[in-house]
Every structure is written in structure tokens, then in C-alpha cells.
View (cartoon, rainbow, N blue to C red):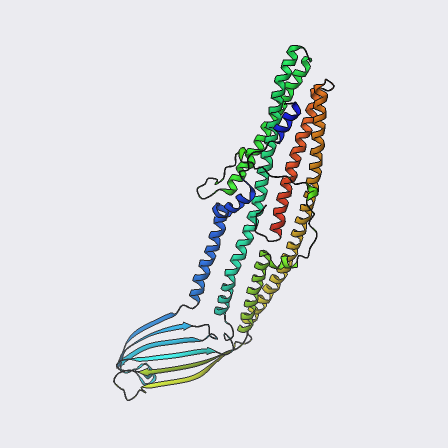
Length: 462
């Protein structure tokens, strides 16, 4: 095997594909602590929403008991009632039971009941304030939006995790490739140095070539040590990011796990043309989340406007005494009435209304800014992706030229027309060209991932 063939074999041998980005991403969102935290946040919000929604319509139980000792008027009275709020126009339903026996003064005769007490039923229906909407039902509507809001928040967090995962994965991949190239160069130098020593001993070449070869070996050992340090650093950062609940990485990140990708030529890939991004802006999780915040602010505004209205409630009540009849009591009674209330000059309601309007204006402005930011991120990611395609095309062409130069220089060296210093420079240039191809490919894949994330696409296919 010629030196050139050995160089190509050593430089471009690839490890078996072990940890490809799509496989990593799929498991990452199932097994990593990062994803578990996002899921727990989502579940916590859902549980809080469910509990809060149920508490809005919890019935209210009230009970009282009095025993009066006051001269001639000795009596006992007890009262228990259950108040139930409803979502039907803010109507409140009241059912209750009370009992009163003994002697009551005339002005407190309403407390007296027949011997088996009195049952009652009542309705309170708001006609203006708290009618169409009230703070309670407004909170319920906001709670319903909060569930969807948490889903958008979860997707936004996962998009950011996917972006960070791409950065760390391709950094680990690039540093691993650099280390492999450094090892191949060192191995090539060691193999060649053995042959140079044999030729020096035979007197075919001067001793200076052996000394230069030793210097090159030391230089490449130093380069390999530096690349190993960089690889270990990126590996540790990567492991800390993808750790699972057991505090161990679910993946092996050793050097042998660096995958073998097919490196496309930049010329074979078409640049991404500018497109109308209005649909992407509107359907991006961040935009949808901000839109939900606007809707919540609109609910607060409607509540504030409603609270500015006067209070006009219709009250309907019916009651019936049970047991032995008392001459002074009606066995059944019903009543209907209205209650009017309007604070003057309604400064508290005006303040709440102004505050709600300000919040709504701010949230609408934030929505516009969010969509502009999404548009700019998509455009920036598109430009970066296209530039990475251009760089990959250049790196591929440079690598082809570097291979030809090493091939020609190697022939000159074998024929005695060149020296080891020049050949070393050619080999070093070839290694750097190979690294630039790795880097350009990693940059392309990272840019492609960032472009998808900017568009709100939670996917990780090749």
C-alpha cells in the first residue's frame, strides 16, 4: 500500500453510525431530565387549572345557632343554608332550613317557626352588573385558556430544548471528528517514521529527515492531546444536558459513537428561497401563546366594563313551615323583589377598567412584537442556512484539491524531489480541509435545525 493510499485510508475511515441526531432527539424528549421538567410543569399547570376550575363553583355551607336569655323573651334559633353559584347568567341558588322556638318580641317575630321548622328556596339573578359576565365566570374563562396556554408554553420550551440539543450534539460531533483526524495524522506519522528510520540506517536519506519526522510526531501528539481535551469538554457538557432521572446519560458518547454521515455537496442542495411567513408567524407556539394572553386580557376588560354597570338583582324566595300550625305564621310564603346599588362616582370600577384597557393594549403590542421577532428569526435562520450551504460547497472543493496536492507531493517525496517538511505541510492542509468539511456539514445541520425551530417545527428528521 502506498503512503497516499494509507493516508486516505487513515484520514477518511469512519466509525460505525451509533448516535445519529434523529435517534438522539427522539429519545431525549422521552428520557431526559430536561424533558421531564417540561412535562412536570405542564402536568402541574393542568392540575392547578382543574382544581381551580372546580373551586369556582364549590357550594358554600353556612350554619348558625343562637340561644337568647333576655328577661321574658327566652328562645332558641338555628339556621343552615347551602349557596350554589351557577354559570347561568350568574344566578345563585339558595336552599336552607331554620327553626326557632320560644318567646320572641314582636319586632323579631320573623325568627319564629312551626315546631318542625321552615324550609326555604331562593334565586338571585343579576340583571346588569355580574349578569353577562362577572369576576367568577371571567376567571373560569381565563382558566380554560390557561390550559391551552400551558400547552403552547410546553411546545415553546421543547423547541428551545431542540435548538440547544442541536448546538450541543453538533459541537460534540465536530470535536470528535477533529480528534479522529488528529489520531489519524499521528498514526500516519508514526508509521512513516519507522520507514524513514530504516532508510536512514541504509543511508538512503539524510539524518535530518529522521529528526524532522520526530518533530512532526511530537507536534501531532500535542495536537491530538489538545483535540482530546476539547472533545472531553464537549462530551461532558453534552452528557449534563441529556442526563436522565438516574443521573446517568442514557447514551454512550465515546469517540467510537461518532456517526458516519453522508456529506452532500453544497452544490447539490438548493438554497431556501424567501417565502411568505405570515401563516408561520400566526401559528408559531410563541405567537399562539401571546394571542391567548391577549384573549385573557380581553376577558379582564369585559369583566371591568361589566363591573362599571349598576347592580340590579332580581330576588325570588319561597318558604314553607312544617309541623303544627301556629296562628301567627303563614304555612307558606313567597316574595319577589329587586336590589339596586350604584356607587357614586364609581372610582374603583373606573380604575379597574383603565387598568384592564392598559393591559390589553400592552398584550396586543407584545403580540405584534412577537410576530416581528418570529419573522426576523426565520429570515436570519434562512440566511444562515443558505450561507452554510455555500460554505459546504467551498469546503468540498477545497478538500478535493487538498487530496490532489497530497497525492502529488507524496509522489515527489518518494522520488526524492521533495522533503518531509513540505509533505507535512500538505498533509496538515489536507487534515484542515477535512476538518473544515466536517465543520461545514455540522454547521449546515445545526442551521437546518435552527431553521425548523424558528418556523415552530418540532421535528428532528434527517
